[in-house]
Amino acid sequence: MACATLMFLLGKSINTATHECVTFVETLYFCSVTGLTIGYGDVVAATPVGRILVIVVGFLGVLMTGIFTSIAVQRAYEHAQTLAR
Image 1: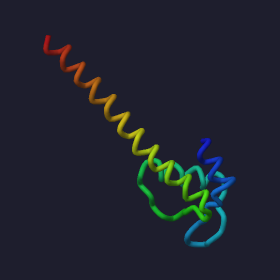
Image 2: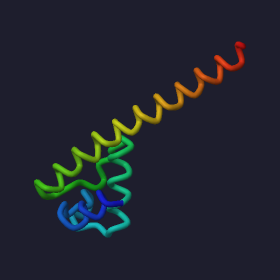
Image 3: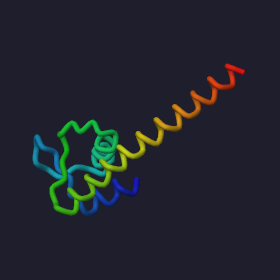
């Protein structure tokens, strides 16, 4: 939510079809799509600060995906070890 707020205030996200600034909800959508590393391209950052924020959000998305995956694998491994006993 904080990244979306910063992006809305500093990044000036725009809709690529209409070239108009987007609403806060659309900015939240943009940050979610970027964080999930989907990147549809329908909304983009228009300022250098916004582009830097997008890079940070993308890296955080990759990091969080790795963390969630490692937690899931660790729990599955522990569960398999429990069943093997």
